[in-house]
Image (cartoon, rainbow, N blue to C red; front, side, top):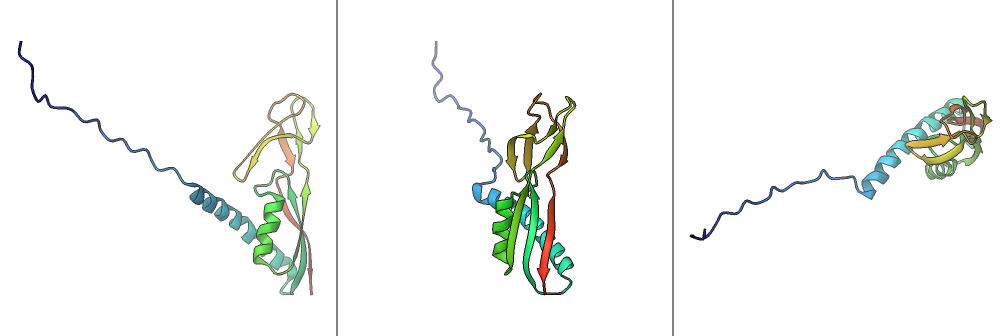
Length: 140
C-alpha cells in the first residue's frame, strides 16, 4: 500500500458576517430619530408663538411616547434658549378582560414598547399615553 504524499488540502471558505451597527452607529440612529421629534416640536412651538419671542414652553409627554420626557427636555434645552417644562402623562389602556387603566410596561425604548394588561397579561388596546403635546407657549 502506497501512502499519498502531498495530498492537496481544501481550504474552508471565508464566511463574513454582515457588519452589525456599532454602539456609535446605534446612538447616531437614535439621535436622528429623536431629532425628528424635536424638529416637529419646535415647529409647533414656533407656530403657536406667532413670530413672538418665546420665554417658556410646557410640553406633556405620554409615558408610552416614542421619546421619554427626560430625554425630550434634555434635547430641547440643548437647542433652544427658553425655559422648557416637561410633564409625563400616564397612559391608559383597555383590555378584552374588562380592565381599563394603566398598563404594565415591560419594555420601553425609543423604537419599541411592550405592555401588557396587569390583570390578564394579554396585550391591551392603548387609549392614551403615546402623545407629545405642546400645552403652553409663553411668548412676547
